[in-house]
Length: 256
Ligand code: MG
Image (cartoon, rainbow, N blue to C red; front, side, top):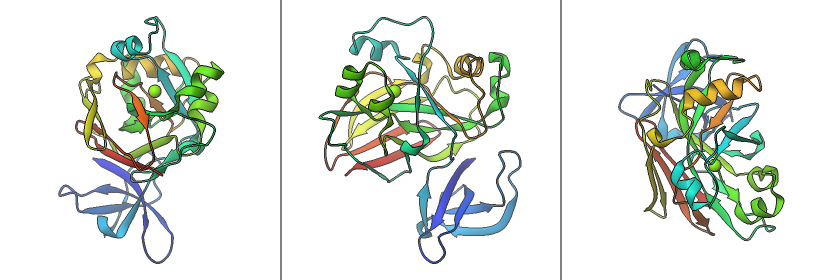
């Protein structure tokens, strides 16, 4: 099921949670969504009447660096024996079709196409074998990075934390049984720049739920962004970037 959050383009600025109809043309509205039951109101809206919002509002985005071998090589780093974690603030999130704003202080911002895990149940000290029970679904995240500031600061907070640096969505796919075999592609102005499969992840989604939940409590809606494959590169004004993940969908954003 493809789950999302929307706002009606006209009239009251109300927010709706809903799932996409099988034909992909309208949204079935959900009442008081709580990550447990999907209680449908019976109301439907045409997709064309709605504006996309980020599908969840996480308390945090836990992101993983250098989690594909080919990307680790292109960044000229050593392969890690434990996941490298950093946090992106939830204030950085923008929806599908939202605009990425280049901060004046950076001369080079890069796209990073990533599979994102959406937590569905409060998770602390979860075993890898149980990880699936704590995952609501999967979506796309663009881990926008001010590469020059990342090199300068060592710490990632500024480079990864600007407003608009976490495009997320458009939908959360809730019916993926094996997140470790999904084709992942990134297109800059419709030209293929990143192409990989999540089978190439060094630490799998289930490994990451175990590892991260051993450190911090994950709440429903929290995001784990699993890292990017090789082929990262710069974004410039007026560029379009799309992340396409098999069975999940395509997240498209513009650079303002
Ligand atoms: Mg990344």
